[in-house]
Image (cartoon, rainbow, N blue to C red):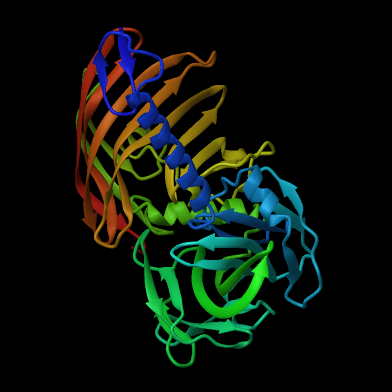
Length: 436
């Protein structure tokens, strides 16, 4: 019989139900589950989003990052002990959802704060774990203290910099560890100076987050157990472009953050033109194309619809649930984006009863830490939902005037049940117009 276990796959005879090997496996699984349970809070932090747009609201998430919306019931229940307030210190009552805690906001709200006590943790020593978070609509709102026990302030500085100050009890926190955005998708840890300050390059993304840890030597009891140390984790989450018109502010920020991480999308106002040559579906191709022109061959060469191509409203689906990533829609354009780890994972495009799905299978990093989709799968569906065509394409890029143009395309296209043809396309005479 074929048996699959944690360690190997092999063919063997049945063994007794309970053996030493079985016991070892059970202990390994139990230890792993226990580790996950005990480490759950260790890798998670409290994040507050101050969301603008067509549905002003606060969202609280107990998660790994400001882009993680996968809270389970236990995490949501932990947050229900939160104390939440607005920038003017008026209290805010949140209600539970599957993905976190939410509360509607007055139109003029620019700052929301929250904090809660997780409980005792042991990592060589026993300490009390406290979480604090602030969310702002716009970077300007992040410069003023808002009453958190542990708090990060942020103020734009000269030469496109951002000055951070970590406060504890209203005073500068010296030598506090601060996790800040770095190039691309990366983050780095820095330390505050004697004024509790550190200066970093201004993040260029529409959504970013900063995290600090401040240790406090304090004796006390929690749940009848003593502690001598409190660790305060505090986050600042900034929606840097809060004026999103008719869009949902969170959906817009998540989508445009992922767009900015994808180096294939040209800068606003720029477009590339090229001559494409090669073979496609058994026929020779030679044609002039331009980015976004809507031609079938262009949609094959540059298959990812650009979220910034129109001002149409960006929304969250009405049946939104907890997930590591986000599903974001642009209803007027028939587009649904699935975003995970700040990258576009798939796109569904619907027009006139027909649809196609683009899945990014592999990414490469650029020198500036952004991402290029180098292997994609494009599935075209008929009006009845049946699959008409599947293309799997490997892609190369050429950087020209700061724009990464997909200039080589090789793969196979399968049409129907058995017809498969090779694809080979190359772009030449590439020209870039507009800002790079």
